[in-house]
Length: 414
Image 1: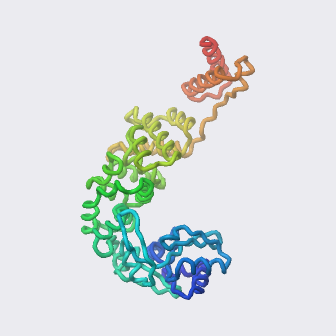
Image 2: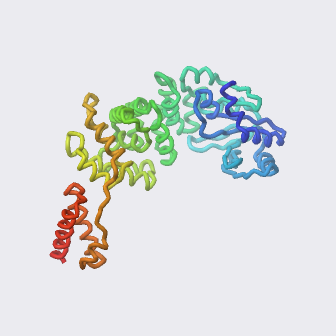
């Protein structure tokens, strides 16, 4: 069985091809799905191109009873949903006017012309319903060689859409092997000032995809060396990413975009604030980075790996997942030749140890005369702090002493 048959064996794809055949025009699978299955990867999404106009595509889908969403109708794209799975179907087109951010298009009927308007040769393959792969720009040869190469003149492709600068590095990280294509690298560096014209959301999306790639440390270092990163958000520390990935492998931890970004660009809270603005971080991403840097600061107070008392405190305050990230961020600052055994022990402890549970409820203090409100909140904070300092005791006598001391302290201040 050919690798591309994986796509065609999907019954939803067969039904979609059957649906589109009613337009009377040819349709093919295009782009990344073909590239990925040929590399032995599972495609995240499957897109199709067709010579049919959007109205014909919509009418055919409606007749088949499929839900249709006009996601990019001005550019010929509609989304057809089959069994809950969305498939983008785009009418063949050519770019009439481009300005590096947006394009005006006209619809056409040539798969070859549509392929030649795409960014890289490995992204320009198309697949017919019968399993034939069409390759107009030697994408198969480049894919086999692990070469990420612009179609035609790199400068022209970049001028059409400046996001292709970041996509060049992203695909070089995910699908490239060896040195970057010299012509592509040269033109990306020459055009780097245009990155500031892109929306922060688009930059965020490309960078976060890049940071998941195996070659992310190497590619981020190249981007940093050529000044692209400083344009996007300021200082960067690529050697920390290399150290992070080494440690993640030791503890069998899957890389995440946010932790990779933290290692690459965060050493203080001010860096998180800058990234929120420059990359339009979500509230969830921002808040997690803030907690990461708090944990990082606590762990970096000592030059050695943390003891279990500190780790238990961090687990209690922040939870296991973000504690792991904060610990890995601290490790990224350690020299490559350092001994990892103590840090490994700390990482395993954070991953497996139960999170301490504060054993004293507010009802206990209320029963002793502390009224609900500010005084109760103060007493609970004092108790929690004292409990942490006492190394999380569960002994009733010790807890009793802590309760009495907290009540006494809060009573004195009232």
